[in-house]
Image (tube, rainbow, N blue to C red; front, side, top):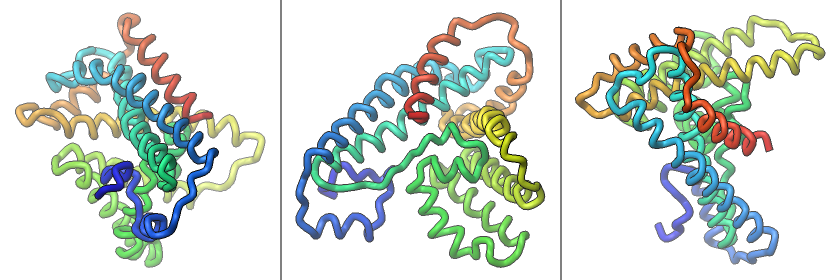
Length: 274
């Protein structure tokens, strides 16, 4: 409880990793201090400059439960929330790790460029890693993992992701978010098993396209997640369907919100790329 950098929300630290560090003497070295300061600065950049600047736009866009735009400009709102939630979660994880380093502790790396991944399995190896590993070790593997045939593997994936959705909040939208990612994992697993390997010359080009496509799929998932935070008076189902209807309509005009979202979003992607 006194180890204040260790947050319940993440990184989720295992006793086997943290308690030995508490029990042994620590010698704080210069490189560890420099790394800690750097992580804190990067974390505050993500949280204050990126997430907190995008938050008013996101809050405004979801305030009534109906899309503020009547066309595909709605994607800007989903992009903004995607980068806001990354800035929040990744930012405070970096700050927690940085503060821990200043006191001689090492916490687990919690985010590793999640928006530069090309498929759902890779995304969950890079997004909120300590939670993903927790769900794997305490739900998926005890249920049987992938050891008892295709149907039971599908069942185990779906149960794990549904409960992962409920971990974030008890509501229809969070359940739908877990179901959405469960289905993505099942489809990807089936596709990977059925498809053959591509020639090496095509891998880079295909991977770039896959990253772009999967980022947009992830944004649709974030729509479900954000709808779970709407006030009780607003129907989550109506909000989700209302937003989805606008995503496929060509925009009527150039929005002034484009440049702020692109600038802050590009900064978030640059931090992931580097």
